Amino acid sequence: MSTTFTIDTSTSRAHPTPAPMKRLTVPSVLARKRDGVTAEPLVMLTAYTVRMAQLLDPHCDMLLVGDSLGQVIYGLPSTIPVSLEMMCAHGAAVVRGSYHSLVIVDMPFGSYEGSPQQAFASASRILKETGAAAVKLEGGEAMAETIAFLTARGVPVMAHVGLTPQAVNMLGGYGARGRGEAEERKIVGDAKAVAKAGAFAIVVEGVVEPIAIAITKAVACPTIGIGASAQCDGQVLVAEDMMGLFERTPRFVKRFGNMAETISEAAAAYAADVRSRVFPTPDQTYQRKPSTSPDAIHSA
Ligand code: KIV
Image (cartoon, rainbow, N blue to C red; front, side, top):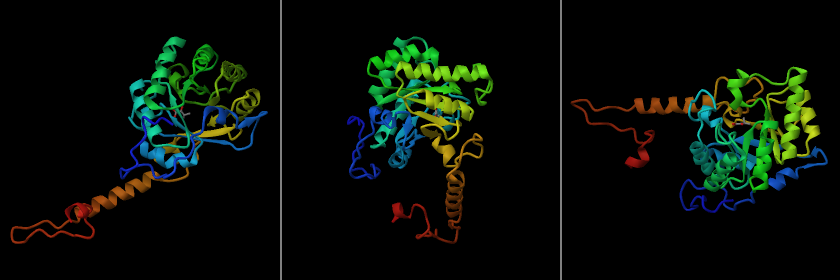
């Protein structure tokens, strides 16, 4: 864990865990898959903010600061406009909010594809500014040289194959990949290439189950599925999808909460409380409702 980014524990919103746990490392994640078998599936969720990291950290093995923050946090139409500055700011917040999980930060579109040297400049900036231990980048065989370049220089890389959202303009949408034989061969080949190049784990997104199985059997490193069946070595979801923050989520997402309803109920109750205040009339003095007023603490 980066000491540079640790929250002062004397502040009221400091990390709730009094005794920091030991953070998982890249080798410890890699070691979870032994002789092709992952006895305990790897749990990964996205996190973009310090508070969400604090809440998710004790339950996860890995926290991914995904470039999906473009859509989830910034309301952007895709991940294409996400910048390195955004990833560094959110990555640092997630590292500050976590003690246990391995934190991985996505490399945004345009920050690594140009050359291995460009990728190293971007990745080293991410590791320095955030305190995260690894980066993730999208692409298969075409990125193998870059992955080898980064890993040889001390940058652990999580790869991402199958449906790669940064390639939305080439793919024409976010539909599942690998439906034909040629595409299936290409995706499995991509996974083998990035594994051989040194990726310590591979996100496998939006592929049919036989492809997820073929990849998981073919590579020594763990596969982390999203929309890729339960046959991978681990699972990742966008945390807000999993918690039910949005009305519409991808078909493969299993919801474990209804955050949209909880938030809107709280906002409605707050609004009703404020609106129920009694205002002074010309012949009356102002009447406060001391026990229910939301700012009673401040006015006490
Ligand atoms: O950006 C992201 O959140 C991701 C995951 C969905 C794998 O890449």
